Length: 83
Image 1 (cartoon, rainbow, N blue to C red):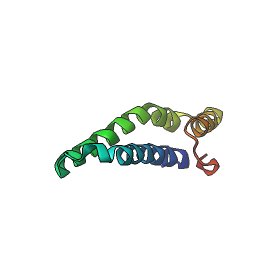
Image 2 (tube, one colour):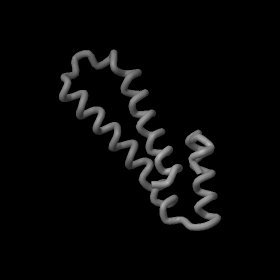
Image 3 (cartoon, rainbow, N blue to C red):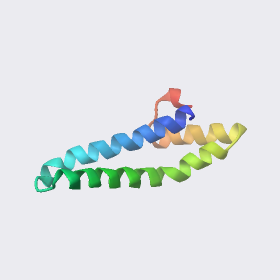
C-alpha cells in the first residue's frame, strides 16, 4: 500500500467519523444496531468515492504516478509525506 493511498483512505475515514460525530446528537432515537449500520453505510460511500482515484494511482507509472499523488495530496489536503 502506497503512502498516498493509505493517507487518502485515512482521510476518508476521518471525514466519515467527523460527520457521524457532528450528527450524533440528532440521532438519539437510533438503536445501537442502526448506528452500526449507518456507520458501515457511510464508510462504504466514502470508499466507493475514493475507489477510482485509488485505482488510477495504483495503475499509474513514472511521472504519471507522481502527478496523481501530488494532485491527490492537494485535493484532499494530505500530508506531504504521503507521496
